[in-house]
Image (tube, rainbow, N blue to C red; front, side, top):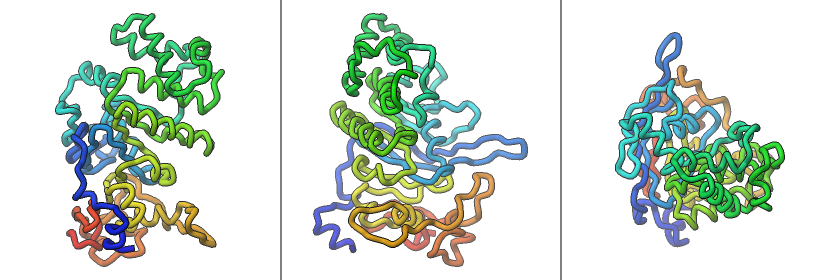
Length: 338
């Protein structure tokens, strides 16, 4: 399927679409960590934006740098050194004091982590945990409890009023994930960062959680950054997709276009490894090898040892960014950027 076919099907390249007003803008973000022997770069010069009410997915294999990027946006890891610029609604997050950044978390920015059990205190009731963010901000106990109940009702937790005084072990995995979502949403943030929110759930529960997240984000005009290694859950949720490999974003495009015409060989490899209802194959393809460790990246294009299209220059020259006719931002020598 070529450009002309896609355009006649009514899909417009990203550069021709009107993007929503920027809420989060990340420019040249690098993340370094000091080890015993040297400083190791975990994420290298990453740039992207998220508009108000926009749903963006950041995808890639485990170890690609997705979660450490999400934690950096919230400034949750004091062991790493951040450089570059991260602006949220005009504020430079990297220049805020610890107390100023703490005020942003929960109130303007919420986060959901992979494992709901590790995010919940087994000794605190569900109601107290959901209301805790509000209580820290000085909201009265009565109002905080009512708002906790409201958000649990919004997330369709059965008998929410009765279960405010329950403990995490009394909830199923899917219900615990709804509680974690409630904790992130109760402060009515403008941006929700969801880090692998469905990893520990079975397929049917995954679908319910994503449907809820879709419904709530639309109702609240909530911007969402969805971190995942599973492209299968991205297609029906995200407006735009960023593909990360070895600490760098190698492709970014509107979700519809990225799935229809993936440009980077790594993106194509990820998609070929996902089962599809419209295509019958004897065996799914996989990408040979494994991603490099952050401290042992190869020179040139970091994907070249695993790439079927690698050329001589790929092993020595790092590709620059090119915008393809379909509007994808791609780092690959196949598109002529050196």
